[in-house]
Length: 194
Image (spheres, rainbow, N blue to C red):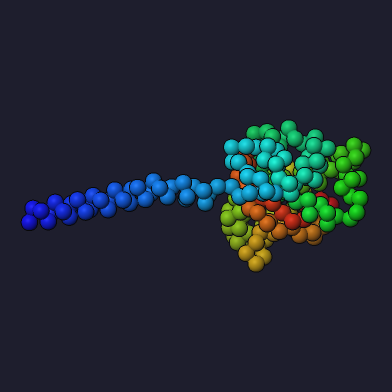
């Protein structure tokens, strides 16, 4: 009888130890699943700020050039928190021909600043929280940007969308890219203020 109890205790100890080792062995895998997504072929690091990450995304070279031309690098490198709806190069390409080149001219800096700050909110909010706000507001949640422009957040086919003041709609294609000073949500269209 003593042998059986000892064997059972030993078996239980082995199961507990194996479970513990399994937790240790699988913890990096679980952590990897929570890691930030790749954006524009580059890893996004939660310990870096919005600018430090954005400059590495090959899909955001137009946005980075615009941020530099607008003089917003220091702002978006600051403490935050910021939530940036980051249009891709393809999103900027949807604008009428010549629009980006015109906006990047020094004489259009004020207009460029207004457009870019219409993509920035002074809070870092993850997509699930935005989705809950949309649900709580019966399908449409107003989002005030740093420019003062209002966006309307909605859900469409399981994706978060943003409607600008002109009726233009952008869809979040990559959500919840954590930054040291906020979060980036990648979008497929440029949001324009009135």
